[in-house]
Amino acid sequence: MMDAHDTNLPLNQGELEEEKKTVEVSEEITETPAEDFTTEVQPETTSKFPSKEEILKRLKELAQDADNANKQEIDNLKQSFYKLHNAEMETAKKQFIENGGTLEDFVPQEDSEENEFKRLMGAIKEKRSIQAAELERQKEENLQVKLSIIEELKELVESGDDANKSYTEFKKLQQQWNETKLVPQGKVNELWKNYQLYVEKFYDLLKLNNEFREYDFKKNLEIKTHLCEAAEKLANEEDVVSAFHQLQKLHQEFRDTGPVAKELRDEIWNRFKAASTAVNRRHQQHFESLKEAEQHNLDQKTVICEIVEAIEYDELKTFSAWENKTQEVIALQNKWKTIGFAPQKMNVKIFERFRHACDDFFKKKGDFFKSLKEGMNENLEKKKALCEKAEALKDSTDWKATADALTKLQKEWKTIGPVAKKYSDAIWKRFISACDYFFEQKNKATSSQRSVEIENMEKKKALIEKLSSIDENMEMDEASTLVRELMKEWNTIGHVPFKEKDKLYKQYHGLIDQLFDRFNISASNKKLSNFRLNINNIQENGPQSLYRERERLTRTYENMKNELQTYENNLGFLTSTSKKGSSLLTELNRKVDKLKADLELVLQKIKVIDESLKE
Image (cartoon, rainbow, N blue to C red; front, side, top):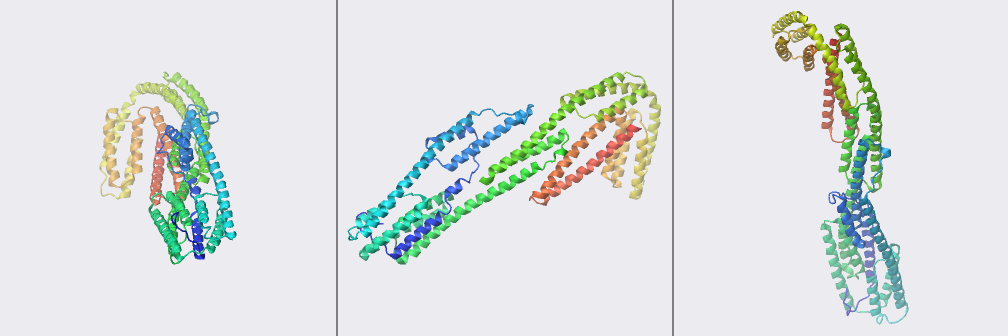
């Protein structure tokens, strides 16, 4: 543009066409205003503000200058504060339930920090509302100013006075127009068209020489070239949102700058347009990538919700089953915390869905443990009654009848469910002590059985000799059958003298291991055979030892069954929703197959004990 003492030149039709192009730049650049995105993008800020105290401190700083506070930062602070606040609430709720309370009775304590947070947010909101109202008022004032300028331009055009004499007044109106900035968005295009109409008519009235016109064209070219260079540099700006806002200001300057020489108009316009397109493209790609990431986060959170909602509550019938499932839910909650925000319109809805599913789980868990506690109290009374019966029989010398009676009590004990953990060991020790005392006295009274044990020892030595003499060239199937028959015969032989027991066991066990390895007999059969040998040793301490072993195996079986159920559930979810590949699926299938084999082996061991108890 020319200095104040220079004579400005009129616009011709070509120059007006260029002014129309600047309007097109405005419409293209402002298609996606930054405000539309800053309200949607809510990056995680918990790492920047690790505590509510720091968030409140920053809010106080923003409240001092609320007019210039960044809306995105305020939204981020709000997200961070309530993420911490909700985590504290969940912790307090969990502690309340663990201390015996129910979810319905939980009443959160008043949080003074939340009250301060709301006060500061209200103060900021009030100041920003005042600022927004002031901005709207200023836009209306600017609208009236520009309408007045158009009226004055209209008078200059229609007055019939010499246009050259009115030129100074015309340039003052142009300067006033350019200095008057924002107006209501709905009036921008209409104002600009009316303004350009009378500018064009005024220039048609001017009769200025080409020298002044060319000088004005040159000055405008310098300004627009500078604007093009500035717009091109924005392509390398790291902050694409900032680049977009800077481009809006360049666009306004480009539009307010007068025309250039006709032969350069397309060139300078295309250069500015190309730079604008590059910035707009980066701006659009930036928010598309953010939206894509938010959609991916929504997909992950939806899968987590589906997993919690798909829990089969009818299968959670034991303490361990509920505890295992609780650990899974807690792991999913921790996973949820690592996932970023979902799209704004779904972020609250997906969180409410997840929270409802978790609340439902923990409510059902509370109901289960409440009923379980009542059942445990009943079981405790039943077991106390059995203890009293066992204690009444422990001094009896009617060995056969009392042994049968205690054995019956032990079987009845197995049918009674669990008791509270704090009573479990004590009540079991009381019961088994009475049983052990009787069987110890019985063993002392039946020491005459030693002659039979010596006879059994000779039988086992003879059997060891048979095992040692098996020909290594024997057919595999024949050798396997022979080994099994000898093992079965070994298991039918009764007790041997205690001092010889370990020696014979080691000889027998060593031979069996060699034969199993030599003829490739299955590992499960080998384990079962070793267990049969151990049963004979355990049985020497009386039937109560077998009952204890059976109870241990039963607990092992239940735990392994729950573990198998967990793997199968995870396998089902992975099959329907996971994209991690076949390697994880193969590993889970391998674990499931191994657990099934181990479960079968435990059942076989229990069967061996049951057979021994019937003898």
